[in-house]
Image (cartoon, rainbow, N blue to C red):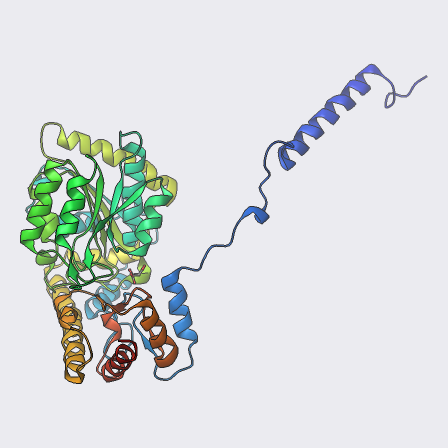
Length: 447
Ligand code: LMR
């Protein structure tokens, strides 16, 4: 008598089924011979982020003279991060609120924050608000806002292949990877004129005039990063005319509202003008710099639909899709920074105090600009230094070459990005003389 385990037909078919299941499980885990198998050995090493890598090198430098002009984050006159007095006040109010809890925010974000952010950027009396033509989502600071917009456009732009995405040359380095990550082909439009250290307006216009119809143009609303070179209102009007005639799509990145001129409305002028002109457009808005809420990741993305029949309904459709994208990526935005900004934006007294704080920051930076220019001119440092005071906002594009930047770092322990950008906020009354001396020496040695 045979045992049930060895030779019964049922047991042998059980074994063959089990064997085939095991082998299909194994090939699922290991991959079939023709399917490439994922292994960490296929992952190439990527370079360190140039900006944050440099910031780390600065921290490790033992020099007691070292100067940090790397990251665009405001510092006070003692080179320390500055918590805005109005932010401290709002923070106290929030912490002492007996109703504070840590529930999820809605997918779109804190409602009183998104509506205040919308008013701040397009103006409270904008017809786009009255017509319900703006879809606003709270985002992970400005980076998250640019990404959400990029993702949305890459998914819903009807053109095949995707339209080209134009970035200013140069631009914030992260713009490249954010847009490439979602499949856009990038183009540059001329922006900085190395000879004048100002705007290459003819180059910019020429490029927009020859961009394929429907291209997306990334525009810095104010305090251009990295150059500190902005368009005048008359130049913005010309750009708007070209963009209208060539059906180009504006995507504004606004990371420095109130930080450039100290005046919130003036810094948002270009955006408000384009909205008033009836453009359909995107806006990425950051509160990192103007509230000093860098680590709280407080921003907003706005999709403004063009006016006309069905605009509100079209915009509601956009919002419904943005909600799905947001849910799949971050579910719900982080609450704390938005609570702080919302308190300030919605309270007239706190708002006025915020405007004072903005003037403190932009005013100190303007003083550093004139102090630096004055010192270089007094020393007779070769070249013109007028651009230091012509440029605006957090950064100055000094015109120093990569090799000069290297000497400044190695010999003087002065840290800045290799394109010669300095964060003006890293200068103060204690290091301005030293920095001017370093620049003077390096420029003389190399010219
Ligand atoms: C900068 O350009 O220094 C800032 O915007 C920080 C960053 O994220 O790059």
